[in-house]
Image (cartoon, rainbow, N blue to C red; front, side, top):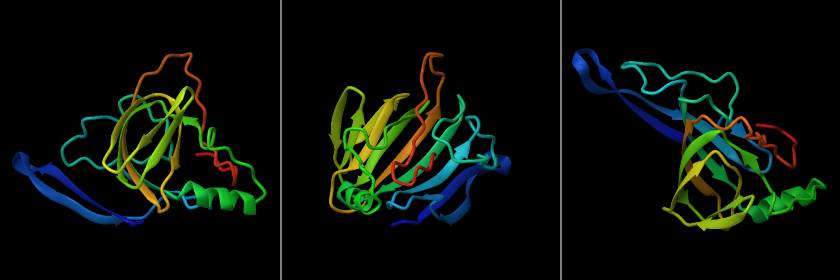
Length: 179
């Protein structure tokens, strides 16, 4: 469940399609509280050139350039476990503000496993397994409200945002690590 298999189909010579890559990808970010993020694909611009290689981000970032595309899988531990972890590490967390951050992207998200809660500055929505969401450059936070690890996949498209948009970086409230 923690590792991901990525199969890439591309155009090859004579404009025919072929499986060009089939590999396992490990999470690139593993936070002490159990969050795991796997970057499956990233490109600076779309569409990608035939036989094009994936671009590399120097450092993982939720705020990608306009026109870029990022495909990620995130595993969220149950919030009840995060609360225990926080208490053991002498931290106080609040479900209404936990993990709030912004993305300068249009996100297409699917809950693959579990139940998730999306918190925004003006409301909360609960999503069940199979539910889909489109998010347009917002401040938000995710909480797994189920008792088992939850899995979500996201396709993030870099978007132009107003100059007045305030970027709020994701900061792990327990370790202080910024993503």
